[in-house]
Image (tube, rainbow, N blue to C red; front, side, top):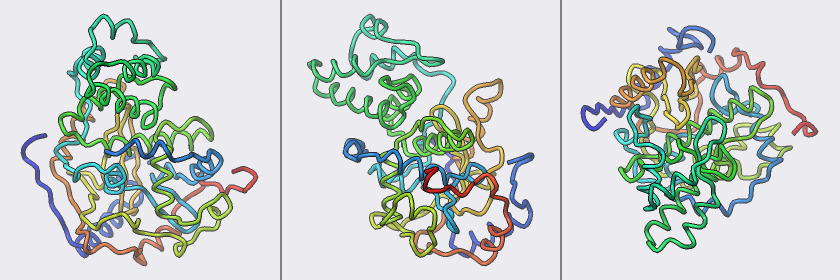
Length: 344
């Protein structure tokens, strides 16, 4: 994905016409069938009851938070700003490739330790290979190379806070993403992808552990809802929302890629789509990295990122069109119950 980029930045009027025309032609379903700076976030205390209450408002059918009369979703641009990543580069997104170095080779590169030391500490946890936090912590305390100490500490943050799949361990997929950061790969889309996928899994099952960065998601929530608790969540209206976070610098907004009518995000365990304009349903836009054809799908998505469409930041305003309000009033939201304070 180093050449052939065909980025296009469009004005508000053009994007408006495109979104409304797509809605008229394809209705709610646009596919066949039914539907950095990480260390600072360690200081955010996660209110588990509040977080569970907020997660109840995730709408897996539309890949957004549906709170009262409001639809809201974190964007790539917001997560890029929260992480203080370099300006988002579409030719530097993470894409899981078929031919990658083995787990132990990547760990050797990151830690500077020998193959024997690494292989002795690799564990099997379910379907994935991992290395324990205890082993990494010892390296942070005793490694003679200061640069490697920092690298191991950063890897630990990614495994324990950003992608906490196996508690107390850093898994192979996380290590693969971290290994690519040295090539200036942008981590924000992958982090957002796994956030959406985990919210959807927990929401559909009605239970489960969130495998994502709760601190980062709460920081985003607090930026848009100045006063938020379990009671206020149930009665939120558009006037209660800070539509543009105070720290967000206006800029272009990515809203579609390639021939897709939405943005497909490649995570470390799977892929999912989202629509920043919140107009169209993302039917069948999620899959995991398993099965006979997942590599083909990943290739198609990676190619789509060679041609992106963005909305001019200067034209963005916190508004909804009359057509969107009408569509939203008619759509089926029976998968989003109205939670009570007791249930939350």
